[in-house]
Length: 147
Image 1 (spheres, rainbow, N blue to C red):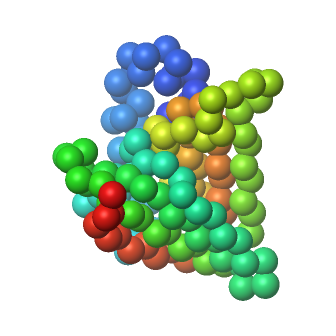
Image 2: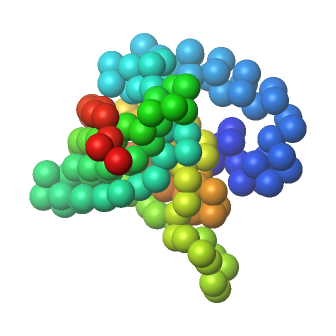
């Protein structure tokens, strides 16, 4: 993570300038991002969502991640299906502690960066687990949870 680091989170997120710096960066790259990322960023949230399924298709170079999350008011549970295409890298760093109650926990923060011709999405979970995906295409769908 570049902006929303685990050290920043552990310190209680007291440096609120991180949000402004990331927002400025995101605005500077927004014209380079797929429409789905802009819609997800502007109209939805993955904050406090939990990973329910991950599927990697190495032949098609796709990664699909299903999250059980919330609407932006954190009132109604929603299912988010994110599909990353033209994936060139997917790193998963799970908690390094010997014993953990949960492997990932809630998704706390996520950020995007444009690196050359690829987009990188970084995710930081409550357990300090991190995902890093490098990709070119992105789409998502959202539906109400029956839970």
